[in-house]
Image (cartoon, rainbow, N blue to C red; front, side, top):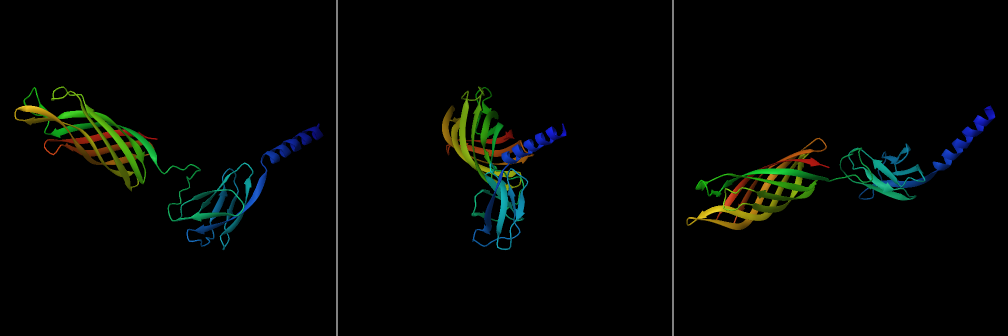
Amino acid sequence: MKKIILLALLAVSGATAMAQSTREVKGTVTDKSGNPIPGVRVESKGSTETVVTDVDGSFTIKVLDTDKKVVARYAGLKPSVKTAADGMVIVMTPGSSNKGISDGERTCNWFVSAQGALSLGDIYSISKGSKDMSGKVGLMVGVLGKVGAYGKVMFCPDDDTDCEVFNSVSLGINAQICKGLYGYLGVGGGQVFGCWKSSTAVNHYGTLFEVGVIGKFGRHFMLNAGYTINTDFDCKSHDINLGIGYVF
């Protein structure tokens, strides 16, 4: 009975060893000028194998046959992922030594945000016969990153103005100011509505300019606030914009 158990264990061990066969690869870690970097930690992605580069930046590491990547890490330098191949050269550049790197590490994050705005300025209320304020709602989608982009659509279903629906579309860029804080700047177009000329309410299309900030809280929560002016250089309206959204 003991012999049978022993043989079974040996069979399982042999199968596991075959399934987890390894290969040895050699490489070098350098900076962007080609100078070797000693003391860099090189890890096999998919196993626990880790080595440190020699004074000439060289290393030898065992990787699983099924493992295609190795990652190099060094304080003050960006982690660098490289396809595991004999004779590989891994180039490292200055930056954060974030340990959360993965094969598809995201430097950008998609977001979607519900928007609300209060319009001020040359907005004329037909029923009140005076300037008025009007609310808007809309949607903002885009990508947050060191440099990102976004698009926004707003509308105003307010039948107390001279038009029942106010539409505007804007596109813009955002840039990281500091961790969790981004600034954005955009341009677009839309209706400049409710402007009163010669006792007649007119409705023109104008150019939209907007500026604002986005705050990212935790991994998925964001808030944004901004200011928009929409003008045909004769009439104009101003928006104070607030939004709440989800970052993917």
